[in-house]
Amino acid sequence: MVPDVSTGSNTRGLIVYLFGPGRRDEHTDPHIVAAWDMAGAPDPGRDPAATYTQLAKRLDIHVDLRTRELGGKKPPQHVWHCPVRTAPGDRYLTDAEWAEVARRIVHATSIAPEGDDKACRWIAVRHADDHIHIMATTVRADGRRPRTHHDGQRAQAECRKIEAEFGLRRLKSGDLTAPRTPTGAERAKAQRQGQPVTARHWLREQAYAVAAAVHNEADYFTVLQSLGIKVKTRLGPETGDVIGYSLAAPGDTNAAGDPVWYGGSKLAPDLSINRLRERLPDQDVADRPRQVVDPAQAWHRAASALHATHTAVDSANDAIAQGHLAAFGDVLHNLALTTHGPHRAELRAAAVAFNRARRSAIRADHQAATALREAAKELAYASHAPGGLAVAVLFAALHLARAAAHWHAQRGHEQQASAAEQALHHLQTGYEQAAAPVLTELARSTPRQQTADRFEAAIRRTIPAQAERILTDPAWPALVTTLARAESAGHHPRQLLAQAAAERDLDTVEHPAQVLIWRITAEPNKRVQVALRQGTVGAARAKPTPRTSSTTLIEQNMEPNRVLPQDGPRRRIAG
Image (cartoon, rainbow, N blue to C red):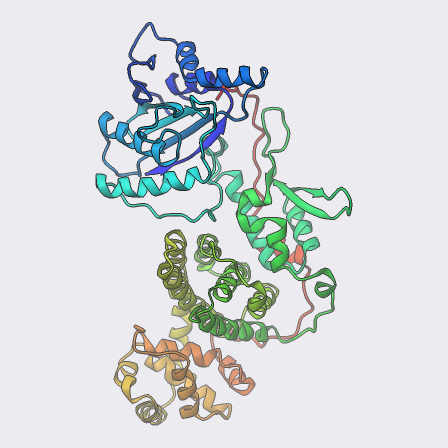
């Protein structure tokens, strides 16, 4: 059950909409199911003699008194509006049940506390099977305004109780860190224009992806503009510094032909200019020249940073863990940016899903996650990883997403835990698609049986508790090849196995041989990597390359520009 609180200033205009034909969905049999006084509330849906104006005057009676007291000045935003909708698949409630829902919500939000004869006047109108609209005028009989602070949060909490009592689908509780939901008008506009998502949603995902890849604030705005997105900054009156910004999608205009602007904080709380600056380095730091390195090193650093993040998430410091989860969101975006292949779509979907899991009410310590964030940005500019190194990084990301879901669930972050689970599902699918050809090629290159027997003995001596599971794992032949290549580089197999097994317990993993393969593959030992790159799928030797500019890289790898047809003038309905 979803409530959606908003405010306005046109009582009659909202009444016209509630009892009218509807803008997008047909309004069927509109009528009042509950009110401050069922006998005193004219119902235009049931009484032919009742008019919209009569109902508006009855609702506004206290507002009009207050207006006279204020010398003709109406209280601002005095119309309170809260649609309440059941979840898809829920049973349809009766009028009596919806009446109870309405009374409980106006009580919970302090619009009309039970037993308060001075409360605001309100009505609940049903014009569809699956929802009602509660509207009130927020001036009490004693002339005071109701205490509606956190009314949306209180309405959500009451809906969770109603769901349990009415046997409805239990939705996830929020913590006021979710991005704003697209309005019905925005959704209808996207549908008219044949767009799969609204302009608000599209801008949010582009902003996240760009922020993950760029190195400073200036690059952030430059790259957004290179993607066709309009940028408008707000400058401080004294310093002239940027204190805010707004974005507009290409071609997204209002009835007058002007761009439709969305402030950064209105796209998502952590896309405000202040939150972005917490994650982006200072300009002088960002402008320092960067040493050109073997691109494979970026992938090794990403794997090491993900492993360290797993430890940070397991720690008792929630601020540090939250900071690492925010940086992990950047890793996912840049993995999708750099990846080429059929699994790229799954990685993009994982990054989008995890955007909700990267923030919570816990204030993040972003400085603690500097290493992971820097590794994420290096990943954005790295060429495709040689051999199975990209799969090893994806495998580490998969396990970190699982840890993130568990971390959020332990702290009651229901929406974030659900988002992390969605990201985990996409990462699992992407991993299976990416790992299959690499594991197949490794299995085809298995050395002679004598070598395999030696490695079996090493497994039994080094990891005796997991030996049978490893040796019967379908990926065992691929592990033999991985160990043989590491041994040819001068690394002792037993020492390598011991290090890989010690990273994290193997008891709970389904395929322990695969875990060992990717841990060994991500081993930063340079000699091991030279051997592992030989003969493996995609094993072209990586060469140092100059850093690609932010604009060029993102233009080449991000989704194509969203081109929206101009929206012609449309009739505006009051309320």
